[in-house]
Length: 88
Image (cartoon, rainbow, N blue to C red; front, side, top):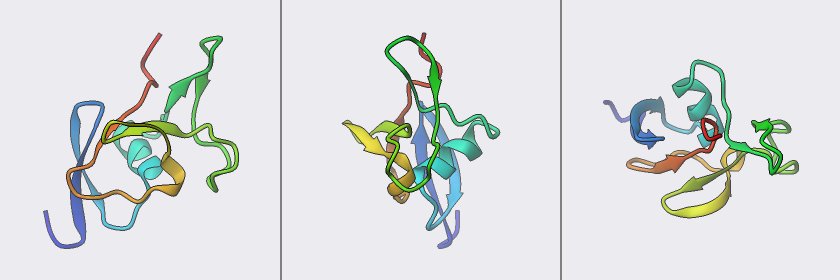
């Protein structure tokens, strides 16, 4: 890791990302482009849509705080992110 990258954990998987990227981008990098963040009440998969915090489809849990907008949150060293992308 260099000064221009940082480590964070997404769904119990440690990843290295460039400094300055959003959590939504880090999720996409960690999941090979399939950036599921949550499931709708009916079970449909949800992922970032607007990228500017309006649609709220990118909500995740960050460091224990639920309903955080991943598209509006910059990654920080040691951050723990939990998605519901894989939940049934």
